[in-house]
Length: 257
Image 1 (cartoon, rainbow, N blue to C red):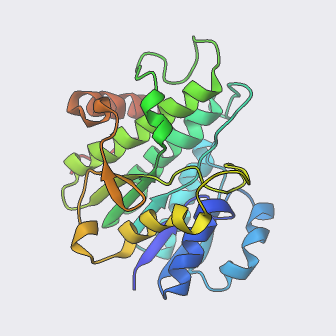
Image 2 (cartoon, rainbow, N blue to C red):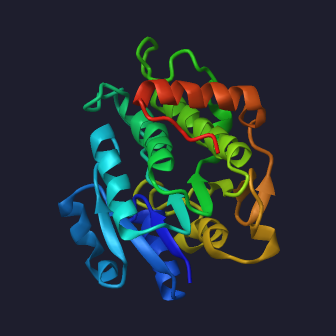
């Protein structure tokens, strides 16, 4: 049975993924933003290997999450599920970053660099990534007027590019991106067309399945099917430039091999 760490697992798709994996006998490490949020995991926590606690908008707390996961042991897979959507303003994290960018892009990058390397990496993106502006000049929204929809789309484009960059850099790791669809979660709302069981299915399959179809890397998935992502995410030059900028902004280097 696999050991899987899932960020943002107190509710929504992260919690559904954790429940699914635990019910199938896998070992799961959960994540909560705070001690108070961890209380929502009471029914799952007793079955889990542990709960890492830390607010992913904070670089310091993100590093703490990585330390907690490493103390538990090496993961077989990490599902980077945590994310935010409609933020009314840019916000400012403890390090001065835009909140959407910090949680959706910087945190998964830092966790990837700092957690002992697993065999599989899964990054949750969105079909909206195709609407990202694809600019590396103002990743952190320091100069542009705030646009929450564009910020979200850009962050989800960046996470696909990061998944593909890792597929190139770490050929021994299976690194993929998943669009779970517009699911009926707290973020997606009750009117969303995708039920939560369907929304979590692809990422849990990629995390633990020995199905030959799941043993691939550098792919973009939607409801168990491979799809073509935005063209720029597949450009090695764009991927490398993004990784360089993330290293500069976080002070955390991504190992090359």
